[in-house]
Picture 1: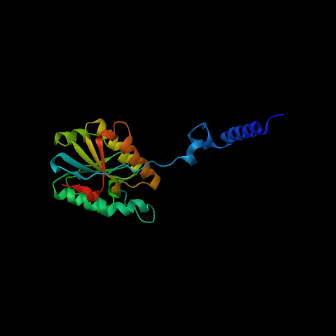
Picture 2: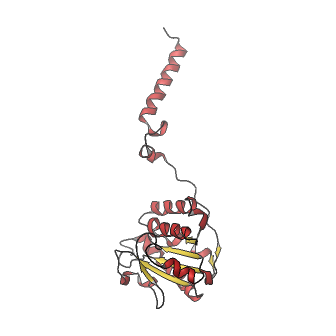
Picture 3: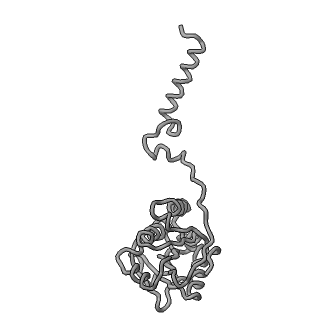
Length: 215
């Protein structure tokens, strides 16, 4: 017969093995889905004040759809429109180059009225990386612009991909986190984390807020 202490230790070991088999967080998970509910979000990244040089900076306002960016359809999007409107007005007042985009699911006339383009401001259509499939890069570089301020929706599409596209083309990206709405808070959180930590994009992107921007 086993001694009582040995028997007790064997019972503990067997119980631990059994728990590891049934609890994803207790042992080596088979894949990320096994760990999903046990993952804790990392601390938020630092956001920094930024002073912009209007002559070398462009503001790119992306995909604010007036038909869906409303309190009843996309409340997170509607909530940032006043800040986006204010920032665009400040950029224009300082003579900054302003560019607008809309998606392939929109018409130019769908851009929300409070952030719609004025005469002379380019408007481009496309999805994801707004540098893709057009002459935006050449347009900006011809003007001596080396920095882009990115506002728009969605955070996990237009903002994230355009920031990466900007970095790959030699631009610095400034992203105010209070003007990049997505469908959900999680999508915004993930996008902000990726902008701060992702390969290529993190070295060329500064996270800020609209009230921390100076011209």
